[in-house]
Structure formats: C-alpha cells, structure tokens
Amino acid sequence: MSKKVIPIERIAQRIRHLRGEKVLFDSDLAQLYGVTTGNLNKAVNRNRHRFPSDFMFQLTAEEAKRLIFQFGISKSRGGRRHMPYAFTEQGVAMLSSVLNSERAVKVNIAIMRAFVRLRQTLETNRELARNFSGLERRVGKHDEEIAAIIEAIRQLMAPAEKPRREIGFHVREKMPRYRVRKRR
Image (cartoon, rainbow, N blue to C red; front, side):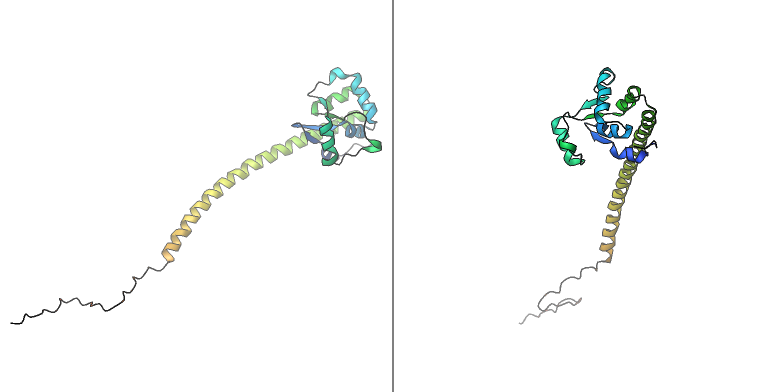
C-alpha cells in the first residue's frame, strides 16, 4: 500500500454491525495497516491480555458463514484456517499500542475519526427520526381535522332531500271539507 492516509469514507464502508456492536474485521484492519492478517493476529495473540471480550471477539462459524453471503467476504485461496476476529472501537484503539509503526498510528487516527463520524451520523439520524415522528403526529392530527371539515362541506353541498311524492289523488286544500247535508 502507499504511504498516503486512507480516506475516512473508505474506512467507514468497512465498519460492520455485528452482535450489536460496530466492528472492523481483522482482514480489513490488516489491509488498512499494510500488514498480513496473520501478522496482525500474531501481534494480538502476543498481547491477548490487552483485548478483553468487549474489545475483540472471534466470530462463530455461523456468523462467518453469514458474512460470506451478506458482505461478500470471499474465501480467498481456499478459505481461512481460523475464524475471523472482530474489533470494536476500543479494540482498534488498543491496536495502536500493539502496532508501533508510524503508518499504524496514522491509520488508527483515521479509523477513530471514521468511528466518530459514524456516531455523529447516527445521532443526526436519531434526531431526524424524532423530528419526523413529531411531524407525522402533527400531520395525522391535521388529517383528522381536514377529514371532519370535508365531511361538513359535503353535508352542506348535498341537496336537501325532497319528500317523495305520494301516489294517488290527494286533496291538498286548506279549506275545510265539504259538508254533506243529511237528507230528510
């Protein structure tokens, strides 16, 4: 790899969500640091006491199998002998104390910036989601009010129902009926 610092966007694309954590895989980190995955894992295993389970964990066979399909991680050269390691943000920070090269320090700074940017993006999205749900509630309330107004307008626009005309002959005079005289 060249001596240039890796763009934050490229690092952010490699951050995955696994077991409720944002993680980077050992193969991605090795590529970013410019070392082989085996050398990275050897350095980690020599300093195993620095990587508790919340800093780094090894994937299960099922998780690794899903990753092959979900993220397009290939079985390069016949696959891996060991399950990949996943490093959380704290684990990546701890890697800087294990890997002492100048490139490792620069890459680590870029990775930390990527994690911070991702966290800020998620917070912005949460805020937008809150605002959006507030707007939905407000619009829902307005929809109900508009529906009530439209119903009232329809009732006003509807012509008054005329009484149906009765069939047959009906006397509609306002005068009293004729008196019939009795015959004598």
